[in-house]
Length: 82
Image (cartoon, rainbow, N blue to C red):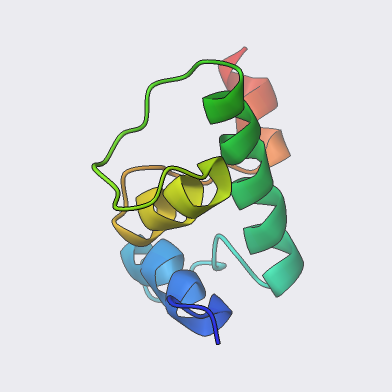
């Protein structure tokens, strides 16, 4: 079993959502996409945002997400910021 689990990651990501608002992440698929995107950024040279005992980009990305160092933004929000 992986630690943290998908459910743990979803709870952390959605922890800042106000009651009545739609959760940032609704599925495991969203967690996987966000983590993979961050791992690719690390592979491409982005600095890790947290100290990790593992040096694999995917493990670092999962840890960053779990420690709330990375925020998941929907595509709609991303397009508004551009």
